[in-house]
Image 1 (cartoon, one colour):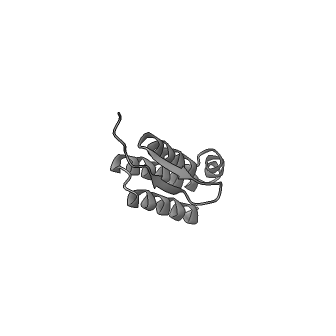
Image 2 (tube, one colour; image 1 turned 120 degrees about the vertical axis):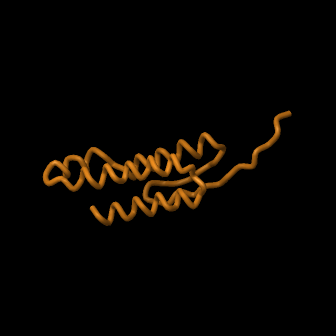
Length: 92
C-alpha cells in the first residue's frame, strides 16, 4: 500500500512539473488520500482497494485536462504518459 501511494505521489509531482493547475493537483491529492485511508482499514480495505483506483482516476483527470487544452498524449498500458503541446494557431 505504501509503495502504491509513493507511485501516486510521483505521478502527482510529474503533473505539477508539467504545469497542471493547482486545483487539479488538489483533486489528485484527494484521490490519493482517499485511496490510502480507505485501503488502510482491515478487511474492508482489501475490498476498497479493488474498487477504488486512485492512479486510474488521476490519469483520467490528466488526459481530460490535456485534451481540453490542446495537448496530445501517447501511452500504452504500463508506460509513462508522453505529452506534447501543439502550438496555438490563429483562425483565418
